[in-house]
Image (cartoon, rainbow, N blue to C red; front, side):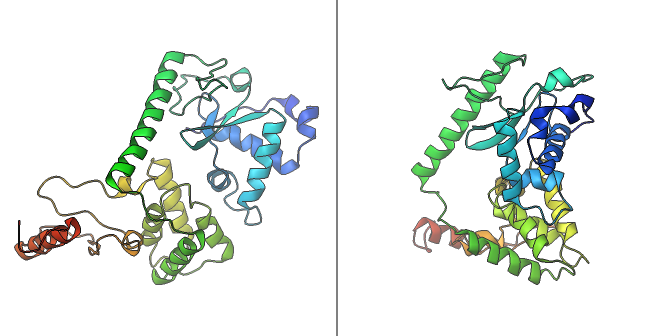
Length: 290
């Protein structure tokens, strides 16, 4: 969680800092402000760009990735991955920050060459070891389940996703937007599921500016909504199916209409029978049998 941080006056005269680009120095200060109380934060360049340079349309995701590499090369930060997710650790973070009532990090610590959690100066090692083990086990089980159930989604190329999102912006009758706005939205592809981006754009339908949709997307990510499952949780027994995004339907999913907000979402007997018939078709059973 981002909190107020301190910058040591010696930062500006440090020779190592003087060897990196000025905007890379600004990025480093931004990383400090965005990190949690253990000096860790998400390391995806697109997400970092949206948090630190939201109004600098001339700064691209590739620029941020390049500056992150510079900081990593100078050992000011440490890039690492756990469970295919990118993270950043700010070196010597606790040496320069005085934190009242520090909160335990929710992000995994970096792994050393032996695949073991490398906590350096961090405390509560056993807790982090357990968290990383669970993370690995969870990712492995998820992949195994996909193979067993044949649920691996068909590949979708990047340009197809961009075209889908661009068309969605037009269909949503959003007033003002430009190429830089679209590029900012595209930068979240791979950071979150496309369905999450789609939900944010639909939320901004009819607004004067696309900034409403972009800020909605940032808010969803801050709340931890990064997967389509977070938007469409499985319904309880007897309940109607939740909303299915148009992007999911375009990939061969059941063509169930999107349910709009209403005081009641009661399913009629006719609608329930239609859903049963659809389920039988998808299950490969004759539609005349239970």
